[in-house]
Length: 169
Image (cartoon, rainbow, N blue to C red; front, top):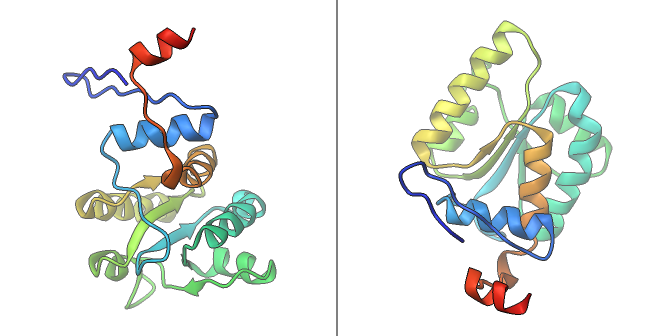
């Protein structure tokens, strides 16, 4: 879609919100992971988001992604019958999630946090490392849902110009 390069704005149009969202991410230069590769999806969410993250992780596994999670999220996934690799949080020892990021084994991060000092500090450090490694990170459940549902369209995207869309009207 149209770009405003000076402000970094992009647009995605699709038959569904998920398709439009994933197109917008690609247009913005987000490096989305491919399923069935060595790159995993790292998931760590606050307690109130755990019930909803289970459904998203089921979708990710069905798409061919492996999941890596911190202890609390890992336990919620295990309880739901979803296999995930458990990994240490920042400050819990080594190897931890930052080590996994630096080894290029993480392709996408979903991170919602509790509102307390340690969680905010860890999340900032996580986001900094993700940015340096070029890993997309989604920090809200709404953003996570949009990207996970959008990943379903990666192999079937159809791009059309605004002129083509206008001609169909």
